[in-house]
Amino acid sequence: MISSSGAPLAHDPSWPRAGGWPAFDGARVDAALVGVPAWSTSLSPTGAHATPAAVREALARFSPTLMGPPAVDLGDALRIADAGDIDDPDSPEGTERTAARVAELAASARRIIALGGDNSLTYSVARGASASGLITFDAHFDLRDGVSNGSPVRRLVEDAPDGQRIDPRRIVQIGIADFANSAFYARRAADWGIRVITIDELRRRGIDDVVAEALEIAGAGSDADATARIHLDIDVDVCDRSVAPGCPASVPGGLAAWELRALTRATASDARIVSADIAEVDATADAPDGRTIRLAALCVLELLAGLVASA
View 1 (cartoon, helix red, strand yellow):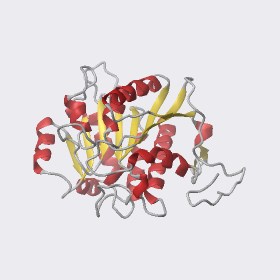
View 2: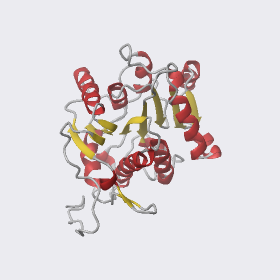
View 3: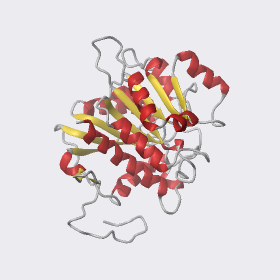
């Protein structure tokens, strides 16, 4: 195993490394990874198409072991498979291809983890997973008109085919930041009934309280007999720029790395989270130490740790 610096990583048979999971072959699994290298509709120049491969490489820097006690190896506790990357996910055909592939994976996996790519992937991944609710960790509303990385939440409400639209009253947006949005889109969110939890409210109330509310709202079914299916969108630009310099829209004052990790694991510990995406990381613009990519890789592991807890 070679590190990003070109130096080989140490080998110890008693210290396994994360990642390197077998290819998805259609058998039942607990979690399936899929790369969605979307980038061409981004409102900011980005090399986010390089990110799925970079995250897979970064996973090898970490152990798959939860400390417990007792210690638990994710590879022993879960069946994990890697379904490779979606080809050309940015085109209209690619959007439908992504949704179809996610639907195929969802038929065999308890949880889909999509490696972006810019935030436009949320539209196709949530649709493919048949999500009835949506939770976002994001500094931005993503309620813009048109087709871009700034519009997936609006598109899930307005543009998705019948039966795949998400009721905006089942959407919770956590981490919305001052000076990163407009009053117009704040009013749109309010008018639609989206529950907005700003970064200030999150810090005032605490992670556990906010996650409990988010799951209650997003997890409500459309009727008494409905089984809720929640998609979790992890836009890493919700983080402070010091820990996420590889996110074009991250700003000073965002979440600390530990806050994003804790939010992710707490939310992912609910079995109604059937799919998640990790978005808005540009692997080509990261700091030399790869801190943003490493944080994204840790989010993958936190999603898996939550799956262990939800069993």
